[in-house]
Image 1 (cartoon, one colour):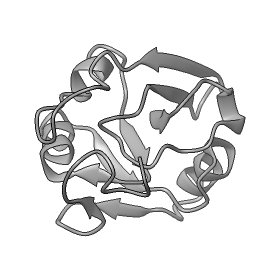
Image 2 (cartoon, rainbow, N blue to C red):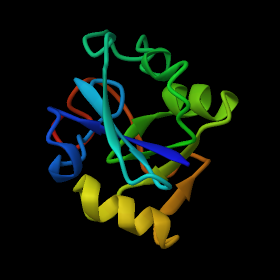
Image 3 (cartoon, helix red, strand yellow):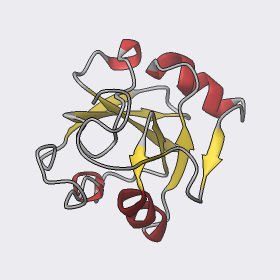
Length: 126
């Protein structure tokens, strides 16, 4: 299974999870079977609120789930429509939250809980 984490820069497993999915500069991917990481540049990081489409950056990457610090309703719904599950980060570092994911210790999002509400600074200052 391939999981994805929004990040500010690619430091592999040591990357902190970025506070807002839509405006993250990139995404670290982690394959739970091979334990390998990858990086995807978010070509849509700069956008007006509600107009982002970061899911497009993940298109074709084979991502099964994303682990986020924060995410807007629109982005979460687009991901879910594409069959991508969305989880809430717990520890805020890719390595720890990858382990949390594999141990089923992350909250799966699917409603309005923990969603970002407005503007670029609505989620943890990002």
